[in-house]
Length: 180
Image (tube, helix red, strand yellow):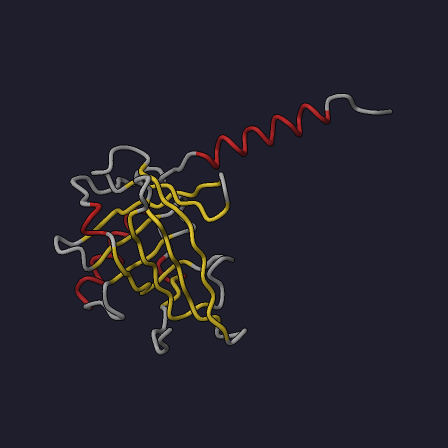
């Protein structure tokens, strides 16, 4: 017997997924930085550590370069060296502010209308080091303007990440030993 409810359920689930992916979230209890300076954040960042996930699996020498698009969105140019495939990989996307552009809460898309949370939860006053939360406790990045980070900054970020609820023992520490 055919079930006439299958199509509406599938359509409903698709709409729910679309609505979810068009927005961006921040993990519960996490606050994005305020008094955020978009202009200071633009430029090149080196990924120091991350919680691994499928889009960055097997990548080292990872960088993210942020620049302003004419329409006010931010161009996101991610590059990394896949050490298993022995080649450079690149993904270009866009980011938009979820709230005001002085709140470090953005949504990033590399795949059309699908967005993920990108939340700056800590940044030093000179915008040299940043701690970024994804939209869940499965995504987190430590970034630096250089290929290394001072131990004191690293320790502070690890404490903050643990307080948020991240499992910092699962972090992948990114090597920077190649140039592109």
